[in-house]
Image 1 (tube, one colour):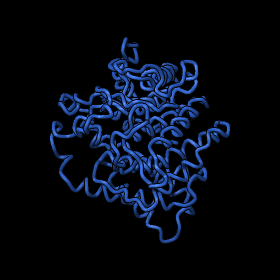
Image 2 (image 1 turned 135 degrees about the horizontal axis):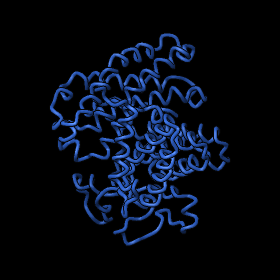
Image 3 (image 1 turned 180 degrees about the vertical axis):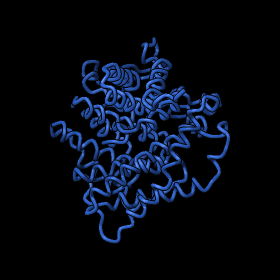
Length: 386
């Protein structure tokens, strides 16, 4: 008996996710979580693109509606209600991302007078910049795939709001986590890759705005310049598999965006690719992938697998655009070295496609995220594209 095709597996995973989280059939209290839903939206669009079956497009649009009406509004247990932007109901429907979007954590946010408890903060609500950039990307992809310019417009409004709240251009710093209403930082440190994710995502949104004919009020030029200044001279290398995967995704997105003129040279691409290679060498040199499933974190490994899927596209891009690389640039050697790690993606997928490994607590504890990111790894084209 032949194993199911990747598309069939992705369909099964996404239907399970839809049922578990109240997307389909629609639950009384759907469970929305911004990171997971951003990957899920790209997966639903990928299934629509591959099958041309309208049910996947409809699920994608329903997911966006639920995310905006749940995470774009105050929590049910909060003293305030309505859109977190403060807009009235009618304006909020037109601009659902103008106040940002909640993470979707189990517990409410920390009160202004409460001391920081680092372990408990992971379970508390608020807004994460790196979750917001994932949703910006997903909205941009939705606009491109469906031709619905308003979706990309929501992504740009989210970028404008997030940039104003999280970024301090004068100090070239960013906050990692903000309160739900974006009035105060909950974690004041800066995420290592947040500036890079912001810069690349803003450039993607600007390209989408041009392609979809959005009016001038959707400009991100100043935010892009400020984010580029924060990125200048930063070190991106990490041994965390999810972080490495993010670098690889950003590298491929940067390459695509150079074709639209968003990046005038390949210097950022070179530094991001080199950092990813440094991290991959460190990670692959360890023994974490040899550990039993019970001691591994699926979604972090699957983030790496997703990024590795973009390396083949990077190679093809380089072959078609040799003039983009300056003489003596290390980029060709770096991408060739990255390609040597591509088999890791299949190995990681193979572990988590095994039914017995999905019985491990590390899978079940984060089941929604794990199944959605496994689906992305198996069919990554929409997520990886700009």
